[in-house]
Image 1 (cartoon, rainbow, N blue to C red):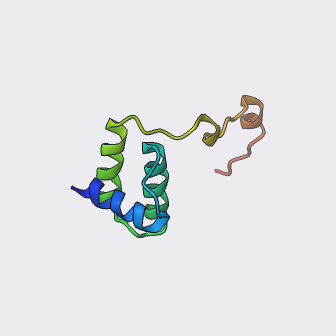
Image 2 (cartoon, rainbow, N blue to C red; image 1 turned 135 degrees about the vertical axis):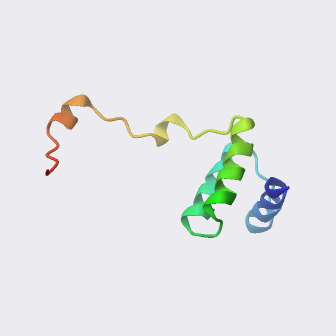
Length: 76
């Protein structure tokens, strides 16, 4: 299973098992952005972690104030 292989890879790199599925989610996203895994592998891993309720913390998402949107000038 791809997820089991990825957990093993995490353990080798970090010298400890993942403490939470969210930690694995961060790890697969980093691996994808660094082109260590393909989009297909990323999607498969993400799907498996999503089934285990992995999520980014709320502070990760940017909150946009509507007043800022009105001042953005998009050409075209």
